[in-house]
Length: 358
Image 1 (cartoon, one colour):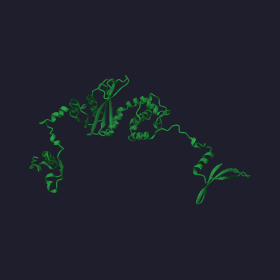
Image 2 (image 1 turned 60 degrees about the vertical axis):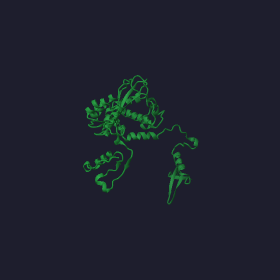
Image 3 (image 1 turned 180 degrees about the horizontal axis):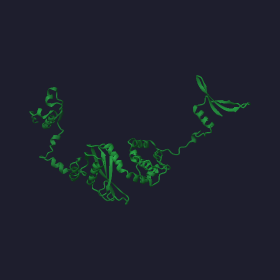
Image 4 (image 1 turned 30 degrees about the vertical axis):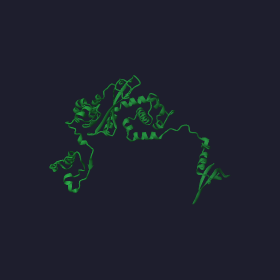
C-alpha cells in the first residue's frame, strides 16, 4: 500500500490510499482503498512513514519521556565571542595534528566553563564528559569522553605557546604612544608542589597559605595582552622591569605610557627602570609628596581648583575681541579667569588687562 496525491485542477489535490496489483494479463494496476483527503496533514505524513516501514512513537502523551535536557544558550553566547575574536585560531595557529586540535578544544572548553560556571578541574571534566554533561559544551566541541588528566595536559600545551599568543595579541591591540595598564595580584595555594609558591603578602588574607604573584598587562580598554607569574614572595615593584623589557624587546613598542598604582611604580622604579627605558608613566603621589606640594609656598595653588562661586557666561560679539570662545569665569579667582582667556585668545591681546580684586 501507498499514499497517492492526485492533482485536482483548481481544487485541493485528492489524497488516496492505494495498493498495487497485477491483472489477469500481468499488467500493473492501482486500486483505491480509501480517500484520505479530509485527514490532517500531520496524520497523512505519519501514515506515509508507517507505510514505508517506520515506527510510530509518542502516539499518546505517555509515549515520550525526557531523559536529559542540556542548557545551551549561555554556552553558545560565550563560545560565539571566543570564535568572533578568533582566540581559538590564535592559540591553534597552523597546527593541524589531532593532539593539538584536542588540546585547543579542551582549552576553549575550560575558558567557556570558567565564564558560565567556575569550578575545579575535576568538576570541569564531569561537566563536559558525554555521560555526566552539565551543558551542551562538550557535545558542541566534540569532546566525547574526557579523562581526568586531559585538562592539565591541555594547559601544558597552552603554556608552550604563551609567547606566540601574547605576541599575536600585542600585534592586534598595541601600538606606539598608547596607554598600557599593569597591575599585580596574588592567589593562595592549598597544595605544596608548586615551585613558585611561597609565603608573602596575601591579598586574600590567607597568610597561612603559600601563594603565587602574577602581573597582568592590559590595554587602556582592559584587554589582556600578557600575564606573568612570579614567586609568592616577590614584591610588586620588582615585577615592573620584566614588563618593560617585554614591551620593548618582544612587542617592539618604542614609546608607551605605563600606568600603575603608587605601590607598583615607586621612585626607585622610576629612577632605575622607567627613565632608563625612555618610557612615560602615570602613577599616584604619596601623602608626604602631596603635603609638600600643598604648602603655602608650594607649587600647587589650591585656589586654582576652587569650584565654588562660579558663573558661566558667553561673551557677546562686542567682547569677542577680548574673550573669544571663553565662557567660564570665576567671581573669586579672577586671576584664573584671566589665564583661561589668555590661553584661548592669546596673551598679547590681553596684556593690558589686569584682574580686578573681588
